[in-house]
Structures are given as structure tokens and as C-alpha cells.
Length: 242
Image 1: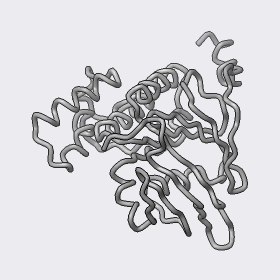
Image 2 (image 1 turned 60 degrees about the vertical axis):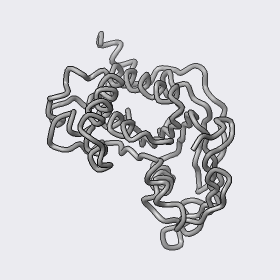
Image 3 (image 1 turned 120 degrees about the vertical axis):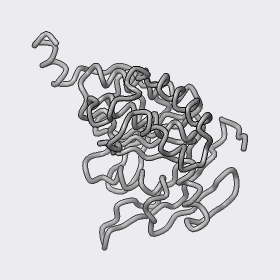
């Protein structure tokens, strides 16, 4: 299906989610466009991960309406489509105890692709993340940054419309963060939408399209920052000569 990139391919309407009597998400409306890079901020417990899981079709809300390519849908009509079109990546990526190649190929094998097609797609994914030299390395032997890149490549290989990255660089060093930022910008250039969650609006050199903030169950739009002060961790590393 070919869609106008300037028009939302997905809209959420009146999204509400609660745990017991506590309202986590309150009557939210949100839309998504191809190639849109969204920063989602909020404190711990604000509902960021809950929102991502609903978007990925993994968690049923109390109420929600969807508009997909102009057609109105309810949750029952939509969650399987969401699982096909949207990939959710945890903060700590789960990788199988096997090679980088086999991890990236896993989802493609589930789709019953032929060996040649799988090989070509995995080769593209390895080139995207610049880890061709580690194709045969067991993923449990990789650094944190390398694991995150493999997780992104595995999701990318499935050709999603939208990738949900839940604090993907929070435990990475400065160099690894920079590599991941560059990779995320490449996804945007390929017209893949990205939602990137963080506690803070400091996102390095990401080419952000918008910044939305979740607080007390409600979303608000924030201005995009063009300059970013160094974090305390960065200052400590600079003084240490790293």
C-alpha cells in the first residue's frame, strides 16, 4: 500500500488505559507519518512503555479507536495489523544465544522466505549497522552498543512502518550512543517512522520531527531543542580524558 508521506498512515483516538482505579493514559490522540522521528519523554512510571506496548499491539487498552489509511478500526480489528507493521525494541534487547547472522535472520525465517532472499536481506542489515565483520559472532559476546544495533537490524529486516525504541541508549557510552543516533537517522531517511523514548530531551544529533511529553496521563507538545548541554556523565568523562 502506497501512502502520501505527508498524511498520517495511523491515528490513535481517545486512547485510555488504567490499572485498577489509576489512570495511566487519559484520552490520548496521536498520529504517525512515514519517516517521522518522534521523541517521547516522561518520568519513570509516566506510561511511556505502556503507550509503546499498546502501539505494538501487545497490550489492550480500556478504550481506543484507530484510523488506518483512512479507515476507522477498533482494537479487535487492528492489533494484528499493528504487530505486523510496528516493531517494539526493549531497553535491554533480547538476543538469542546464536550468531549475529542467525539473530537477524530469525524473523525472516518465520516469514518463510527462501534462503537466498534471507541471505540478501541479512547482508543489507549487517551493512546498515556496519557489523559485517561480526556476522558469525555469538550475540552474547557483543558489547552493549553492538547488541542494540543488532536488535535494530533484526527489526529493520522485517520492513516495519514504525519502530518503537524504548530508551535504547540509556546504558551506552558516548561513542556507542553516537553510533546509534546515526543509525536511527538512517531509519528516518528510509521513511521508517521512529518513536524514541527518553527521560530527558537530550538526544545528541537526532533529526527529530517532534517532541511529545507524557505527564499525568496526558500528552503535550514540546519545542525541539537545537543545542544540547553536556550531561554530568559527559563532563566527568571529558575530565578523565575519555
